[in-house]
Length: 99
Image (tube, rainbow, N blue to C red):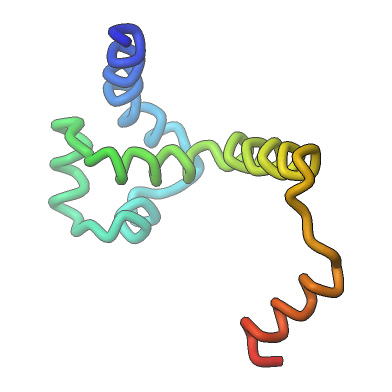
């Protein structure tokens, strides 16, 4: 358990550098997090993003890993038999989007 906490702390400390090395501009993160300029830079400097903000930043910084997790979940669902028929899927889409 202690290792998990230490790894999280190390990750939080690396976030400013990871954000700086990313292809995104600061404005992108501010918009996605819903933070004002001063609040964003204060949180970045003090390294005190909320855990929800850290999750969102991580998803933005590492979209490939998120996609791979989703693929793995899909494969697990298929193996466990949690699938639906394509015609049922189309019907659910029609209802959801009023088509």
